Amino acid sequence: MSLNLTYFYILVIIVYWRDYGYSLNLHSGDWEVDNINIIESLCSERLQIWTKDSKLQQNCTLQLLKNASNNDIPIFHLELLQSFSKADAGNIILCSGLQLSCPVSLKKLSIDTYEEGRELTETEVLAY
Image 1 (cartoon, rainbow, N blue to C red):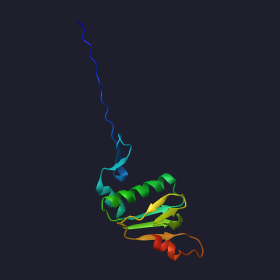
Image 2 (image 1 turned 90 degrees about the vertical axis):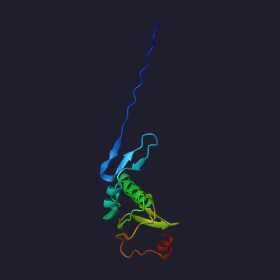
Image 3 (image 1 turned 135 degrees about the horizontal axis):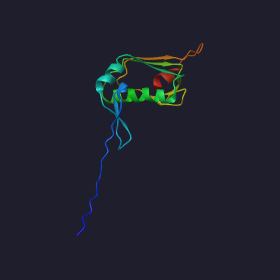
Image 4 (image 1 turned 180 degrees about the vertical axis):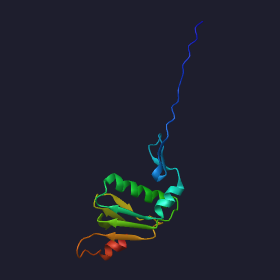
């Protein structure tokens, strides 16, 4: 009589993005909030999105805003520095093409276009 044994090894990998309080869910591929305190700390300071930021950097900031809003964390101040393109249907469109939906917990929004004489239209203000 022969005995066949099969061994299975389960490898558990946890990926953390500590500076922003996230861990990677390897099954879904989504970043999940791992540490609310870090998100609260980041959102208690002024957050900035610059036009010179890479799309990845801008996306990370947008994800932070979304996670803060989903967890009812107040967002003290968001500053758009040369990154605002237009407002459309309740969203802000950044120069990079990324869209920012207004987080419910946003307390203050500053838009600096650095364009001489540029004014937001009433429609743009009301759209957001």
